[in-house]
Image 1 (spheres, rainbow, N blue to C red):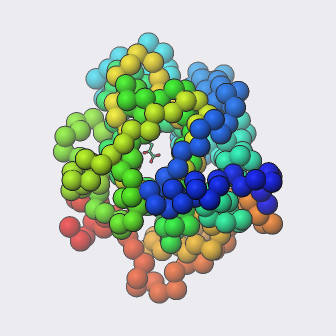
Image 2 (cartoon, rainbow, N blue to C red; image 1 turned 180 degrees about the vertical axis):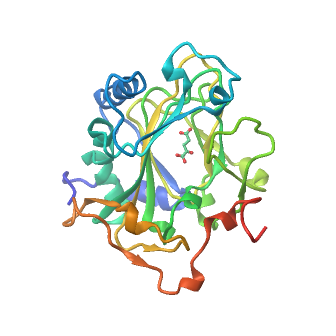
Length: 295
Ligand SMILES: O=C(O)CCC(=O)C(=O)O
C-alpha cells in the first residue's frame, strides 16, 4: 500500500516511462540518504564493519590485473553486489519513496531480485557497455520488472553518468558480447551487439544526489568512463511483480529465495511459478555471443 496520498509517479510520468522506457524523479530522496550510503560503503571497504553474508565486493578489473595502482581501498572497488543483508545499504531497497514509485509501475505486490552499489573510481576504464538488464534476469514478462538507480553524488558526462536509448525497451532481448573495443571489461559486463545505429539516439542522464531513475529491463543503457579524479557512486535495486514466471532453463530459484518487500505478503519469500512448458524456457547464455549455442 502506498504511503502517500498522491501517487509517487503521476499519469504524465508513467506515460513517459512506458513511452521511453525510463523516468527520472528529481530530488526523490533527501541528501542525508545518499550520504549515509556513501559512509557505509567507506566503512565496508575499509573493514570498519563486517561484510554482510552473501555480499560481494568486486575489484575493478584493472586493479585486479595490476594495471593501475591505488592510494585508497575505495579506489580499487568497482561495485558491491547483493547488499540485501547489510541493514544500512538495504534501507535503499525498502525505502518507502522508492517502493511507492515501483508500485506505480509493477503494481502493489513487489519483490526485489537484485541489489548493487556501483562505485566507479577514477583512473580505471570502468565503462559499462550499452546493454539490457533482462539478460541477467530469469523472470518474464519483462514489463513486470523494473530497476531503480539513485545518484549518490552529482553524476555527469565527465564522471560517467548513466546513458539511455529512449524507446529501445520496445524491442526484444538482443544478443550480447564482450565489446571488442574495451580491453579491460569488468566481470559480467556484456554489451548489446550491433546497436550502433541506436546509439545515435542515446542521451546522458545528468543527476544530483538523491535523483532517481526508474527503467525498464529491455532499455538499452550503460555508462561511460569516469574522467575526473573523484568517485562516481550510485545505488540500485531491481524489482518485479509477484505474478512473474521463472523462464530460465536453470532451476535455481529454490535456493535463491527472492524477498517480497511490498504488499500483504511483505516479509515472505517468493515461491512463484516456473513457466509451464520446460521446452520453451530460455538459456541466457544463448544470448551471449561466444557462450551460447545459437550464435
Ligand atoms: O551505474 C552504472 O554505471 C551502470 C549501471 C548499469 O548499467 C546497470 O545497473 O545495469
